[in-house]
Length: 139
Image (cartoon, rainbow, N blue to C red; front, side, top):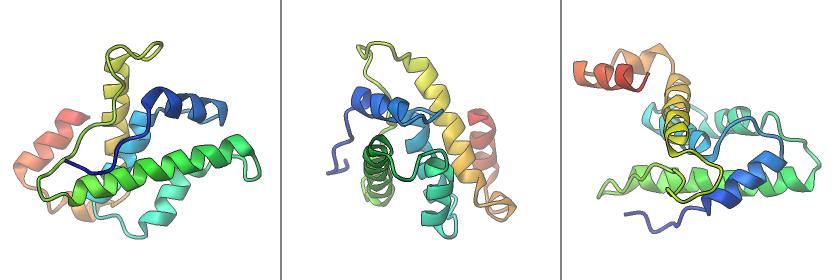
């Protein structure tokens, strides 16, 4: 299990909403996991382009949001390097008001496919039949 604690989901969702981001914390976490799984080159540039593109450069809400998104990326990175494979999807708790868990799971799958897709066709050709089937199932 990861020694990093994930940020509080409702807080993260609220900060992202106030900063004007059109995606969920689940999707942001999954983009990072997908990039790490797909061995995307220059991850920092892709991460910034994927999740910071719509943030205002000189805005307090945007700065707070970037900090939380960086925490999510660090969490994903640590989960992916955990020898015990401590990957936990970043989803809201069942009791999280105003957030549907099924929608968050859909967002996670969408984000993973996006992040993994940033690696391009080169990595897709290296997948086993089971790997291709798993990607198809997420799609």
